[in-house]
Length: 391
Ligand SMILES: Cc1ncc(COP(=O)(O)O)c(C=O)c1O
Image (tube, rainbow, N blue to C red):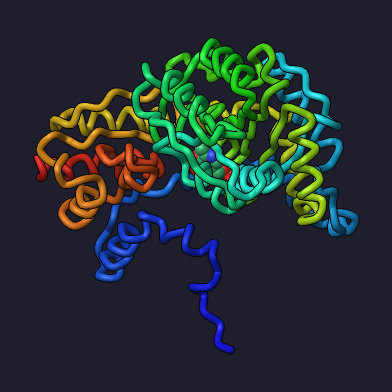
């Protein structure tokens, strides 16, 4: 017998990321010795705050932390999560039944879908979206139904249309502040989503990865602040962005106890919990000084301003986002017909600037490219100067 990966049915549903063709061009250029200014991936470039690293070092030398941990997360970490919700959002979370630690949001969301869905069940996902929002559904052998999430004013209408369609969705994914679109909402939006969830009996999953990366006095609301939200859904948070801990793989999910217990059950078969020193460091991150969180957000704000100013000066006007580590830029009219993939390739070839093509996040993203603010101010200015030649 010869093994043929074409027989693995899931793989045909998981195509190569659209981003891979841009990545390919990027690495070819680099191998020719070209300096590419890289705004491609939302991978924080700054180190984790020192006090969190110190805690990791201290706890890593203690032998008792080398054993299997607890799949749902250390009770003290779940308590810290519950206190974090109370302090930041005045939301009460029972650490025992309404919270679970995840190996980053991606893992949590993927296993959540496996926990909730029977094969063939439908989930309503945004288009465009962060890729795991749709791929987690496919990995769980579910079906995706998309709602167009580009137009702020039509968001609720589009969600309701999707909820009211056949086959009836079992779950709805939302995420604000949004990657890639940088859209933000106020609490009344979540109140309306709760009302829709009750009307159409659907489970709401809110991805809150950019909770803390907010600017200009904007504070992103938690979905769990909405009245009745605990009856209908859960919220996922990640330490990756707020604390520059992307490589540590730690996050959590809180909310409806039936949903959380389903995820707990599935994960109890799959993992033994995150390496304990990482969980202990996560407690330090959540309970300790939050100055670092504000500094991280401030750094993205300064970079956002540089990019928006720099591009504005060359005639590429973009509304400054109120949150996230991204700038979601409408492709200038004269290049629109290229589409986002060809335009991104052009930026690499002619300007040595790498961005993510909007189509990589869904078909409705094709008139946009996404800049991740992971280059320093000087290189951002250099990128804007370099893009000038296209204008
Ligand atoms: C919306 C969104 N959710 C989740 C994640 C991934 O988070 P984690 O590192 O916790 O898996 C990202 C990372 O870019 C994101 O943008």
